[in-house]
Length: 202
Image (cartoon, rainbow, N blue to C red; front, side, top):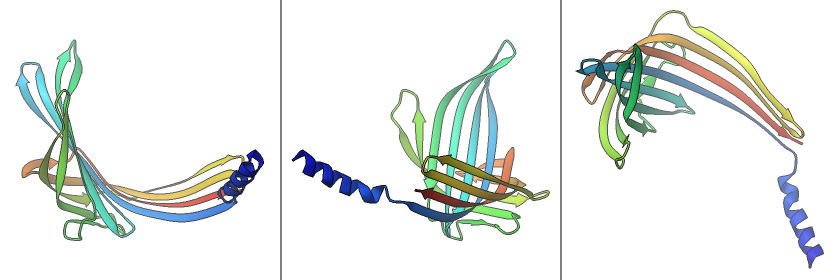
């Protein structure tokens, strides 16, 4: 019985250990922006709210995610000390052309206007959900910067090779978060990236 079982297991493992070769190409476009606002609570203490918006497109599909981080801060001996009050996250997939658009060719502009189910986490309390509408517009500025590189990994019978090419451009961005005007983003960019993967196992 032991010998038969061993032969069956060896036969089953054979296809899994067979040589494989896989090649794929992945292209994406992204628009990112971050906003921060500060509200004074009392002398030496204030609350900082940071919001992030990320729109990305790949394989003909467009999605977006938003984050909101709220922290209470104070200065102690000249140093800033902050404690997170809440963290919120929302994701929306399969956005339509009217909800989101990105200029992949020239990195000149991007647009988002979509609703998100926001999940909020507060320490010591159960998670809560709410619905928010986020709108944002990007305008590319300055020169387009190019980047490229190669990542390679080889160990025994496994070989992985990745060649990537990217372009990015600084941008300005304005937006609203549930009709709250965010003003000008403190950080914004438009970017594209293309990866060519090769995976081989002997």
